[in-house]
Amino acid sequence: MDTEAVPALAVVDARFCAAGAATLAVAKALSMSGSDFAVTDAATGAPVLRVDGVLFSLRRRCVLVDADRRPVLTVQESALMLNTRWKVFRGDSTRRRDLMFSVVKPSVIQLRGPTKVSVFLASNDAEQACDFRITGSYHDGACAVSLGDSDTVIAKIDRRFSVVSALLGKNSYSVTVNPGIDYAFVVALVVILDEIHYQR
Image 1 (cartoon, rainbow, N blue to C red):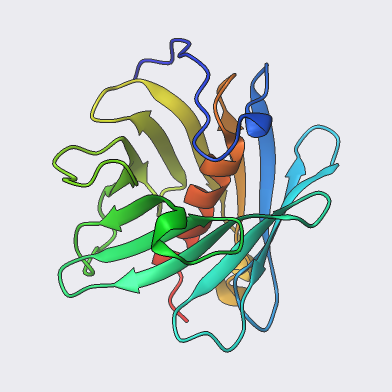
Image 2 (image 1 turned 120 degrees about the horizontal axis):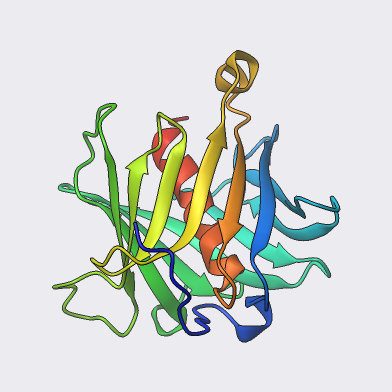
Protein backbone atom coordinates (compact mmCIF):
# COMPACT_ATOMS: atom_id res chain seq x y z
CA MET A 1 0.00 0.00 0.00
CA ASP A 2 1.04 3.60 -0.67
CA THR A 3 2.32 5.41 2.42
CA GLU A 4 3.27 8.71 0.76
CA ALA A 5 2.72 11.94 2.67
CA VAL A 6 -0.71 13.52 2.37
CA PRO A 7 -1.80 17.09 3.20
CA ALA A 8 -2.83 17.88 6.77
CA LEU A 9 -6.23 16.37 7.39
CA ALA A 10 -8.38 17.55 10.30
CA VAL A 11 -11.67 15.66 10.58
CA VAL A 12 -12.30 16.45 14.26
CA ASP A 13 -9.98 19.39 14.99
CA ALA A 14 -6.64 20.71 13.72
CA ARG A 15 -5.20 20.57 17.26
CA PHE A 16 -5.10 16.78 16.90
CA CYS A 17 -2.90 16.92 13.78
CA ALA A 18 0.71 16.39 14.88
CA ALA A 19 3.61 17.60 12.77
CA GLY A 20 5.29 14.19 13.01
CA ALA A 21 3.95 10.66 13.05
CA ALA A 22 1.96 9.90 16.21
CA THR A 23 2.30 6.49 17.83
CA LEU A 24 -0.42 5.83 20.38
CA ALA A 25 -1.30 3.03 22.77
CA VAL A 26 -5.05 2.48 23.07
CA ALA A 27 -5.99 0.21 25.96
CA LYS A 28 -9.46 -0.91 26.94
CA ALA A 29 -10.16 -0.82 30.67
CA LEU A 30 -12.45 -3.06 32.69
CA SER A 31 -15.53 -1.00 33.45
CA MET A 32 -19.27 -1.19 34.00
CA SER A 33 -19.96 0.27 30.57
CA GLY A 34 -17.47 -1.98 28.76
CA SER A 35 -16.47 0.99 26.59
CA ASP A 36 -13.73 2.77 28.55
CA PHE A 37 -10.32 3.29 26.90
CA ALA A 38 -7.10 5.04 27.87
CA VAL A 39 -5.08 6.61 25.05
CA THR A 40 -1.43 7.39 25.76
CA ASP A 41 1.69 8.42 23.88
CA ALA A 42 3.40 5.09 23.15
CA ALA A 43 6.87 6.55 23.70
CA THR A 44 6.33 8.50 26.93
CA GLY A 45 3.17 6.99 28.42
CA ALA A 46 1.69 10.47 28.78
CA PRO A 47 -2.14 10.60 28.65
CA VAL A 48 -3.42 11.94 25.33
CA LEU A 49 -7.14 11.12 25.23
CA ARG A 50 -9.66 9.05 27.13
CA VAL A 51 -12.88 7.32 26.16
CA ASP A 52 -15.66 7.03 28.74
CA GLY A 53 -18.57 4.67 28.16
CA VAL A 54 -22.07 5.90 28.96
CA LEU A 55 -24.11 3.75 31.33
CA PHE A 56 -27.88 3.27 31.05
CA SER A 57 -28.07 4.30 27.40
CA LEU A 58 -30.54 2.68 25.00
CA ARG A 59 -27.76 2.56 22.40
CA ARG A 60 -24.10 1.82 22.96
CA ARG A 61 -22.47 5.22 23.37
CA CYS A 62 -19.16 6.63 24.56
CA VAL A 63 -17.53 10.04 24.81
CA LEU A 64 -13.93 10.81 23.86
CA VAL A 65 -12.38 13.52 26.05
CA ASP A 66 -9.04 15.30 25.84
CA ALA A 67 -6.31 15.40 28.49
CA ASP A 68 -8.22 18.20 30.28
CA ARG A 69 -11.41 16.07 30.35
CA ARG A 70 -13.19 18.25 27.80
CA PRO A 71 -15.56 16.34 25.47
CA VAL A 72 -14.15 16.03 21.96
CA LEU A 73 -16.63 13.71 20.29
CA THR A 74 -19.42 11.23 20.99
CA VAL A 75 -19.66 7.80 19.36
CA GLN A 76 -23.11 6.21 19.18
CA GLU A 77 -24.33 2.97 17.66
CA SER A 78 -27.19 3.08 15.17
CA ALA A 79 -28.01 -0.52 14.20
CA LEU A 80 -29.88 -1.13 10.97
CA MET A 81 -31.20 -4.30 9.34
CA LEU A 82 -28.59 -4.63 6.58
CA ASN A 83 -25.57 -3.03 8.21
CA THR A 84 -24.12 -1.77 11.44
CA ARG A 85 -23.74 2.00 11.57
CA TRP A 86 -21.94 4.14 14.13
CA LYS A 87 -22.39 7.92 14.17
CA VAL A 88 -19.82 10.32 15.55
CA PHE A 89 -20.88 13.75 16.80
CA ARG A 90 -19.00 16.84 17.92
CA GLY A 91 -18.46 17.26 21.66
CA ASP A 92 -20.97 15.47 23.89
CA SER A 93 -23.85 16.06 21.46
CA THR A 94 -25.94 13.49 19.60
CA ARG A 95 -27.84 16.08 17.56
CA ARG A 96 -27.99 15.65 13.81
CA ARG A 97 -26.51 19.08 13.17
CA ASP A 98 -23.39 18.06 15.12
CA LEU A 99 -22.77 14.88 13.10
CA MET A 100 -19.16 14.71 11.87
CA PHE A 101 -18.98 11.30 10.23
CA SER A 102 -20.53 7.83 10.09
CA VAL A 103 -18.85 4.43 10.11
CA VAL A 104 -20.61 1.56 8.33
CA LYS A 105 -19.94 -2.16 8.29
CA PRO A 106 -21.80 -3.58 5.24
CA SER A 107 -23.23 -6.66 6.96
CA VAL A 108 -24.09 -7.53 10.55
CA ILE A 109 -22.76 -11.01 9.75
CA GLN A 110 -18.98 -10.81 9.36
CA LEU A 111 -16.99 -13.94 10.01
CA ARG A 112 -13.24 -14.16 10.47
CA GLY A 113 -12.57 -12.92 6.95
CA PRO A 114 -11.15 -9.59 5.76
CA THR A 115 -12.25 -6.42 7.53
CA LYS A 116 -13.91 -3.81 5.33
CA VAL A 117 -15.50 -0.78 6.95
CA SER A 118 -16.52 2.46 5.22
CA VAL A 119 -16.34 5.97 6.66
CA PHE A 120 -18.53 8.79 5.34
CA LEU A 121 -18.15 12.44 6.30
CA ALA A 122 -21.35 14.26 7.28
CA SER A 123 -21.14 16.32 4.07
CA ASN A 124 -21.26 13.13 1.98
CA ASP A 125 -25.06 12.75 2.01
CA ALA A 126 -25.27 10.39 -0.98
CA GLU A 127 -22.69 7.94 0.42
CA GLN A 128 -22.01 6.65 -3.07
CA ALA A 129 -18.28 6.55 -2.40
CA CYS A 130 -16.59 6.43 1.00
CA ASP A 131 -14.29 9.20 2.24
CA PHE A 132 -12.13 6.71 4.17
CA ARG A 133 -12.03 2.96 4.55
CA ILE A 134 -10.63 0.47 7.02
CA THR A 135 -9.24 -2.73 5.55
CA GLY A 136 -7.07 -5.65 6.63
CA SER A 137 -7.95 -8.29 9.20
CA TYR A 138 -9.09 -7.35 12.69
CA HIS A 139 -8.84 -10.98 13.82
CA ASP A 140 -5.26 -11.25 12.58
CA GLY A 141 -4.48 -8.01 14.36
CA ALA A 142 -3.65 -5.64 11.51
CA CYS A 143 -5.84 -2.99 9.85
CA ALA A 144 -5.12 0.14 7.82
CA VAL A 145 -7.07 3.36 7.34
CA SER A 146 -6.96 4.67 3.78
CA LEU A 147 -8.20 7.71 1.89
CA GLY A 148 -11.39 6.73 0.08
CA ASP A 149 -10.93 3.74 -2.19
CA SER A 150 -7.28 4.59 -2.81
CA ASP A 151 -4.23 2.74 -1.52
CA THR A 152 -3.01 5.83 0.36
CA VAL A 153 -2.68 4.75 3.99
CA ILE A 154 -3.05 7.44 6.66
CA ALA A 155 -2.92 5.23 9.77
CA LYS A 156 -2.24 1.66 10.89
CA ILE A 157 -4.02 -0.18 13.69
CA ASP A 158 -2.41 -3.25 15.27
CA ARG A 159 -4.31 -5.29 17.86
CA ARG A 160 -2.23 -6.84 20.62
CA PHE A 161 -3.63 -10.26 21.41
CA SER A 162 -3.42 -12.37 24.54
CA VAL A 163 -5.66 -15.10 25.93
CA VAL A 164 -6.34 -13.11 29.09
CA SER A 165 -7.30 -9.95 27.22
CA ALA A 166 -9.57 -11.97 24.94
CA LEU A 167 -11.37 -13.58 27.87
CA LEU A 168 -11.81 -10.26 29.67
CA GLY A 169 -12.60 -8.24 26.57
CA LYS A 170 -9.70 -5.99 27.57
CA ASN A 171 -8.17 -5.32 24.17
CA SER A 172 -5.18 -3.11 23.48
CA TYR A 173 -4.00 -1.54 20.25
CA SER A 174 -0.88 0.06 18.84
CA VAL A 175 -1.85 2.90 16.50
CA THR A 176 0.46 4.74 14.12
CA VAL A 177 -0.93 7.93 12.59
CA ASN A 178 0.83 9.66 9.69
CA PRO A 179 2.07 13.26 10.09
CA GLY A 180 -0.69 15.84 9.75
CA ILE A 181 -3.50 13.31 10.19
CA ASP A 182 -6.14 13.87 12.87
CA TYR A 183 -5.35 11.29 15.55
CA ALA A 184 -8.61 11.90 17.46
CA PHE A 185 -10.43 10.78 14.30
CA VAL A 186 -8.29 7.63 14.10
CA VAL A 187 -8.82 6.83 17.80
CA ALA A 188 -12.59 7.05 17.24
CA LEU A 189 -12.21 4.47 14.44
CA VAL A 190 -10.25 2.17 16.78
CA VAL A 191 -13.02 2.38 19.39
CA ILE A 192 -15.67 1.59 16.78
CA LEU A 193 -13.68 -1.38 15.45
CA ASP A 194 -13.47 -2.72 18.99
CA GLU A 195 -17.18 -2.21 19.56
CA ILE A 196 -18.07 -3.95 16.28
CA HIS A 197 -16.06 -7.05 17.15
CA TYR A 198 -16.70 -7.22 20.87
CA GLN A 199 -20.28 -8.28 21.53
CA ARG A 200 -21.57 -7.71 25.05
